[in-house]
Figure 1 (tube, rainbow, N blue to C red):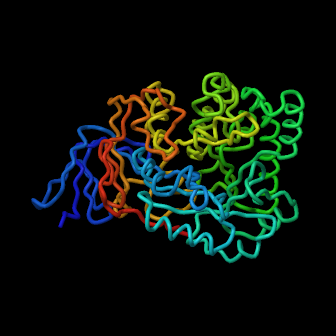
Figure 2 (cartoon, rainbow, N blue to C red):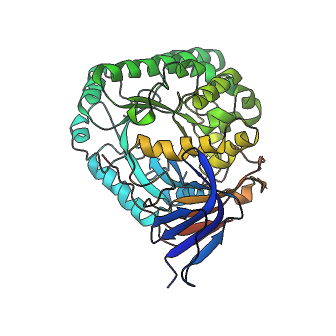
Figure 3 (cartoon, rainbow, N blue to C red):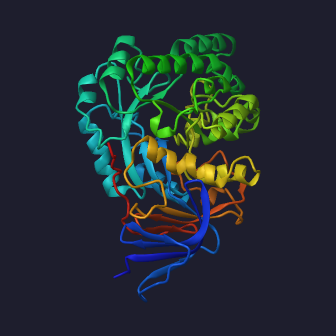
Length: 448
């Protein structure tokens, strides 16, 4: 039987705004000790030499679409959680727009059951709100579900919540954090009709951010914030894409005291509308990737703590689905395997510190969703840990892409940083492009 005691030596430990040189002792599932130097007290202790590389808390991705159940030709919990682990993501929160949708407690528990059998990473799910499921929302146990997800634009199925009276009832009656996709449906519909009249279905992809415009985003975000302030609801606005929206958010309070928070995704920090010519529908997301100025203002808001979280909105489709005319090509793309490596490119360019990356991708999701004992390298917390070599370049190629859909918008990109080891609940599950066949993942719990 393998030892349940693990010692990580010679680490640059990134935690709570500091980098310290030291060792981490893991016993069973937990971090037992963090110190300058720790000696193995038994020959059975498994030692990993971090070789002076960064050790960070496991990344917590607060927004993914793993497509199970019902859309498993694109992805499933098993394949995408493996890709996530290879990217240093040890916990994920998955969205409700599967098939069937996660809009009843029965369907929510079915997803938890799938994940308990197949997920390589720790997991939780959001519950989806509709115009007619308030009774189910009120039955939810806040300790067992990550949050309530509302589509205020760009939904699938019947998940567009567009009845103002229903919205106000939901905002007024739930204690759960409400996470929202904000794009004004009427504005988008009007813009789409204008471009279809001009081009038919084959609208040039460069017009995607004109159709799903700054105005559509700002109108919806500002309304949601206004409603949250009116009702006292706890609001988290997903995937900001415009500079204008960043003005709606503040850094005057510490995150734990904020009632209204925001997230930005990797693709909105990386790509701009100038990339549509080369990448086409592969970078068609909702909300759309917009201008270079928008990207710079998103970065500014992130670094000023008006934006609280960096996530992926991982949402894979097959290449066959993507290879369609504008109106038929779905929005979304795969990101979990490459998100951390991508943001570390900004670290290499002195745009963001490694401490700030850890704050936005590890600490803050744990604080925001009140996740128990995760997101920090703290004694007594679960040992979700990632070793990152910041100077070990690798290139994204077809053969090393782990998503079920088999492609990445980063294909051909060389990243300077490599995720070398991923530990989940004290077990080494990933080591330099190889997976260990161990059962380590757990359902996330919430300290509410």
